[in-house]
Structure formats: C-alpha cells, structure tokens
Image 1: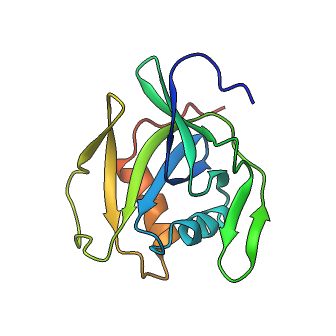
Image 2: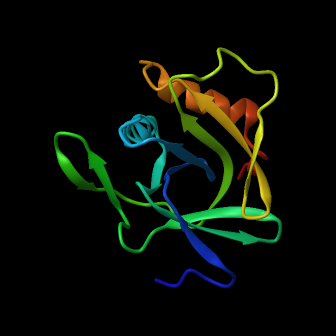
Length: 150
C-alpha cells in the first residue's frame, strides 16, 4: 500500500470517516472504541481503522489512513474480526476519548497536539445508549472545518 509522500506514523486508535471528516477514537482497552465505531458505521460512517491507524501531516492538516496490517478489519466483541469497506486518507477533524470521568458539558473543546497540530479532543462517557449520536454532535459542534458541499 502506498501511503503517499511525507512522514507517516502508527497510532493506537480506532477511526471512522463521516462525510469526509475523520474522528479518532481513543480510550483504555475495553472502553468501547470499536463499539462506538460500529454505532457510527450503522449511522453511515465508514471505517478507517480499528485499534490502529496511520497518521500523516500534509499542508497543515492531519490525515488518518488504514493501517496496512489491519486494513478493513474491525473487532466485533463476541463475533470476531469482521471485514468492512474502508475510507482512504481522511482529514482528522476530532478526537474522542472514552472515559467514565468525562465532564458533563463543555463550552470549548480542549485541543490535543498530535504530531505538530492541535486537534479538538472531546471526552465522552462510554456507557451511553446515545453515544454514536453524541459523537456526531461533537463532530458538528467542535470538529475542525466543514467539508465543501459537492
């Protein structure tokens, strides 16, 4: 797989693309990263990578790409590894960290430095039946840039 020009590095995270905007999902093992990704995929997102993605910086933006070792695979707990279609190089607009101590609300998303770029990072409580919807709303209200409508 050709990753293109520039420096690429692996990051342990799950990632989906929603209308051309990538969400990196992080958290402790068993926090629900794959489950959130599945919920978002059920709502129309496309898998970039599960439990590992490649990242690169290009012209002031951060991009996520499928990791060549796990491309198209997502762990479905109790079922096994399942093959899914993948989104290729997708611009990262938001990070979500799954943690039980998530704040109840925020005014402005804190930023986390990834590579040399500051990415909005929202902490969400993972035990919610509305987690996928909350992640979509976080992308809408706190994510970087809106893609150009076609």
